[in-house]
Each structure stands twice: as structure tokens, then as C-alpha cells.
Amino acid sequence: MESKLFSKIGFCTDFSENADQAFVVARDMAVKFGASLEIIHITVSLAHSPPVHSTYMPVEYDPEFVEEVSRAALASIEEKYVKRLPEGMGYNVNVVSGYGPTEILRLAEEKGIDLLVMGSHGLTGIAHVLFGSTAERVVRKAGCSVLTVRLQKS
Image (cartoon, rainbow, N blue to C red; front, side, top):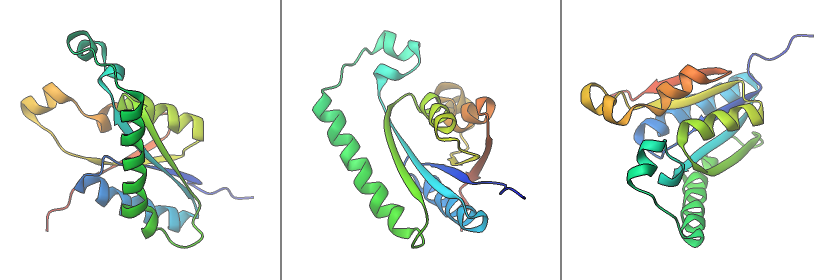
């Protein structure tokens, strides 16, 4: 019996234009391969960032604030992405707080994701040195395939 190339595709969003374009790719690939879609959004908290950040800017978030941010993210995911899925497509929404690359990699392993699809902002120069790239960190450490989608200019 032949197995599917991808049975579970993870789509990572930060609600940017790049992520919106990556969604179209992830959705279309899920349709093509008959895969389910894991929609992933990480609410970044400085408390979960790499040590250099938390050393200089320790932050404790009010649990109500974290819950409010999560509710807003869920509403945005519903409006921007879930409504655009084909009827009957299997999907799951994951909104978690933490350090982006770490949480994406954890969810990919925990959920058995075969392919992660995410936008790439294409930072270069000093911006790349200062901010790094979530996509780059995920590509380097993921146990599954990762497809980064660059924003296509019209």
C-alpha cells in the first residue's frame, strides 16, 4: 500500500502578508495531498524568549492579558484562514505562548507534522543579525521538511 507524501501539514502564521501567501501554498498542498492542516500561531512573550532578552527585559504577563491575546489570535485565524478552507478539510488550530522557533518545533514533533509551511520575511544585513529569522531556526532544527514562502511582489 502506497503512503501519502504529506498527511499533516503545519502552517505557521504571524498574520503578516508573507504568512497570508504561505497559507495559500499550505492550503493548496493540503488539498493536493489529501492532508490535514495544523494552523500554528505563537504569541511571543519575552518571558519565553532567548536568555539575552529576558535578562535585560524581564516581563511577567497578566494571565488575563495572555488570554485576551490568545482569543484575538483565534478570532483572526478563523477570519483570515479557517473560512478559506475547503469544506470537509481536516484542520486544527494551535495558539500557544512562547519562543517562536521552539514552540513551532515542539508542535511539529508532538502533532506528527510532515511538512511545515511558513513565510520568510527575507531580512538581510544588520536586521538579520539583530533579529534573526524564525524560519531559518526552524529550517535548521526541524525533524520534518520545511517550505519557506517568499512574498511575491506584483
